[in-house]
Amino acid sequence: MVTIKKSEEINQPRRRFFGTAALTIAAAQLALSSFAEAQPSKAKLAGVRTIKPGTNMSFSSLKQIDAGLLNVGYAEAGPAGGPAVILLHGWPYDIHSFVEVAPLLASAGYRVIVPYLRGYGTTRFLSSETFRNGQQAAVAMDIVALMDALKIEKATLAGFDWGARTANIIGALWPERCKAMVSVSGYLIGSPNMVPLPPKAELAWWYQYYFATENGRAGYDKYRHDFAKLIWQLASPKWDFDDATFDRSAASLDNPDQVAIAIHNYRWRLGLARGEPQYDGLDKRLAESPVITVPTITLEGDANGAPHPDPSAYVKKFSGKYEHRTIKGGIGHNLPQEAPQAFAGAVIDVAEG
Image (cartoon, rainbow, N blue to C red; front, top):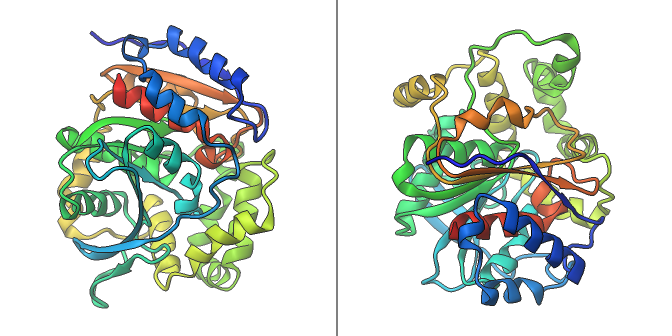
């Protein structure tokens, strides 16, 4: 039986996520949620409680592994035998969006994998001849290949932006590989066959249209750090991130394939760039907007400045156990970095539910 709850609001005081009050709010929210029948164990919540904000500013080390078309750079935390969680970032962000989420989950006993997507950080294509493809199916296949390489049969997938879309695709097309899901901004599977939006809505996608031009490609290549900072500011208008926080993530955009991947991704969405034939079958299935059957918690910040659908628009796209949570306190688009305890708590709830 499908259980659908109304949007739950969680108050998250700015950059203070770990106090007793926050735990009390979380406990009350859990009692009301559709995942309340299987709340996280006290031991797991105790592990989350011990980590203070700002304790973890970077990952201690990175690993590399050949997976499909890529040599993937990734961070890993937690016990090797723990249930797997894969955290997926978006554009123009990187694995540091989860720098405080990963230790929370690791302390709760999960094996946490945080990969750089194609075109980011230390991830590289194995062949210089491979087309630098940013279409959604290709990115999803990368993560399936990574799971195969790491011998992970099934994992809880959690992400935002490109990462949420990637989790959605895997949950929809390969539910046997996805135990459960946390998806910021809900259902993001799309198709290049776009219908024109009202002018105000189109304005929010200004960068997508900029990237459709050769001047846009050149401009992003020349000013990619400045461009990324502008997106951060617009997408999270109430997040007062410092230069060190931004610089840690912006370094990942120096990847030699970043511009090609980002430009192809956004042009493909507009139908201005072709995908590759090997993904045609997947694209056809995704164009039908398949329903996601795996247990899912969707999240939205109350101050998300990036384009995003209203939760009511996608509630019927999740046919399994489902809940939506709105995270309050000026939380923007980069939700896992702005509200790490709320994000980690959703992962534990859906994984245990």
